[in-house]
Image (cartoon, rainbow, N blue to C red):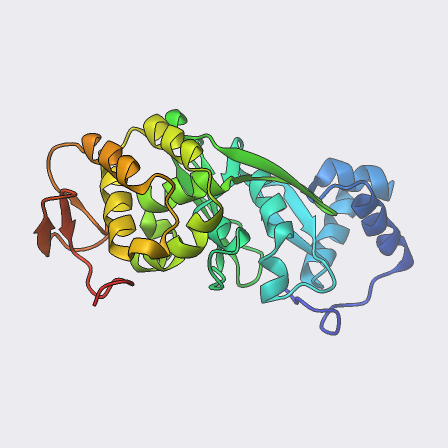
Length: 278
C-alpha cells in the first residue's frame, strides 16, 4: 500500500521535486508518461524507473491505465475524498460526472462521507482506480437520456463536473442504492429540498421518464410532510400522481420483494422504520 502522509514518504531529490512542481504548476491533476518524459528531459526507460520509485515512495498514484496523479502532502483517507478525487474521477471515464452519494455530500445534504466516489457515465467502465489508498471509484453507466443536469466546478487541481442539486435529487430517488439506501435518501430530503428549483425538478422528472421515480418521490414527500419544502405542494403532488405507471415499484430497488402495498403511490413498502414514520 502506498504511503499517504508527509512523514511516511520517501525522500525526494531536487530534480524530481522540480518535475513534480512543474507538473503541478501546469494545472494537470492527471499526467501520463509522455508528460513525465517531457518535463524530466530523459529517455523513457529512465523515466519509467523514476516513476515507479515515486509510486513506491508515496509521491505519485496510478489512477488508470497509463495515467498518474501527484498525491497532495495532506492526503490521507479524508484528503483523498476531496475535490481532487473528483477531478481524477472525471478523467477516468468520459463523458462523466460526479453523482449520487458523492454529489449528495458535496451539496451538504449529509455528513456521511462515502469512501467511494460515485461517477455517472454513458461509457461502460468496469475497472476502478486501485492505487489510491482507502478510496475507490464506482462507475454507474446510464443511458444517454439520463445523462444531463451537470455543472462544472474549478479547483486548484483542475476542473470536474458534478450533477446539479435538482439532478442529484432525481438520481437519488432513481437509484437510492448508490446514495446509501432509501433510508438515507429520506433522511436527506428535508435538507435537500430547502434550496431546490422545483420547476427544474419537474423538467428533469419528465426527461428521466421513470414512473418509479414519481412513485418514490411522491411517497417520501407525503411521508415527511412539512419537513419537505415543496412549492405548490398539492398541485404538484397531483401532477406527479397522474404520471404514475402501472404496477408496483419497490420503494427500495435493492430490497426484498416483500412488504405492504401502497395503492396511492403504487409502491411496495419493502423498507421499515423510515424517517418520518411514527
